[in-house]
Image (cartoon, rainbow, N blue to C red; front, side):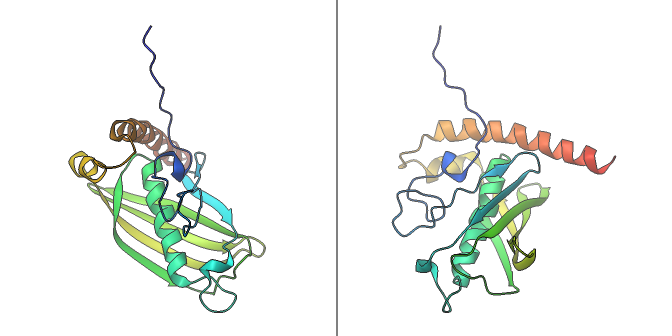
Length: 187
């Protein structure tokens, strides 16, 4: 009997990203070390995090560029979790209220549309204690083709074939989630 590994859909950013990634890489000494977990019920990336002092902008608050990085990564990982390998085409951030350091915040990213080789997402940063929205984001993504992905990862320690196998599992899951959510909205 042949020994084959079963590839399940990704659950966190680390399931497919390299270990030095600024957003989720556990080996990056300057990184955020966030997981970007996927909520299969709602088809979203949702997590709570306390951003530490090394990411300070104004005294006591998270740097706006760090927040933009987190929201860019959350939305990009969301696209992967539903079966698309993407690059940021455009990112719009609206800072409504400064985000304090070392306070648990809720980060949420969700898909709004898929059009040919483009995906559209939104994200929020919310204070879960009072429900106040601190930051919102909208992003447009370019869905990369296999040839470009293979070229990007040719010198990587990641297995490109394993990456594509996981992407296929994610794509099946993404289609099922979108179908389920459409049916739910129509009831």
